[in-house]
Length: 235
Image 1 (cartoon, rainbow, N blue to C red):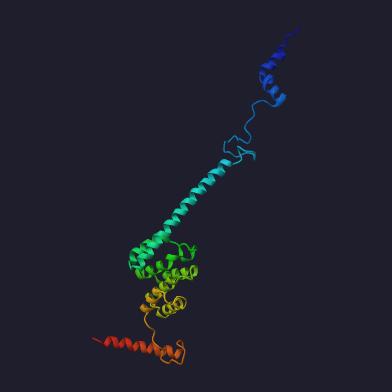
Image 2 (image 1 turned 120 degrees about the vertical axis):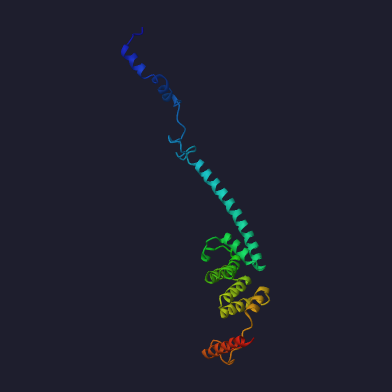
């Protein structure tokens, strides 16, 4: 016969899960168990077994990287096309429009910051337009030299640097750069045009001495001054 025990009834009423969840867990752990690794904060960070291992974050990160790569690729393609257009404008002597486009392409980058050969093609043309339009000779020379560093095999860079030196009034350096380019590319049209624009260098006053000899330099300066005076006298 069952006896009524008021103390036991009170304990069972205060712990209603004893006969259910506890027995289920004892028999085989069949009670309700939280998902593995699911953190209370819901941020997806948990153990290394699945749901909360950060896979969601990794996927989002990879997706962002993929989108970023696509944007970069599009930007690179557009930039290369814009460089081709700006170069064509420079060759056509539309220097102002070319310079405007170059400024959009390269922005405020310093010459030394341009490290990719993909974008080196336009650097010396950028320098040439900068010299001819804005008279910023120092920056223009740096741009051309940077282009030669990245693409030493490209004769147009030598031609552009020679023309920049000529615009800056540094004729001697202009001739040196043009001749340097012509040594490797003797029939290149733009180098030949640049050399023609610079003009034929006069023979040294004393041919048996080196051109850089102080005597030849002094005599050359004297001869040049005399030529300028003769031009001023002509009506």
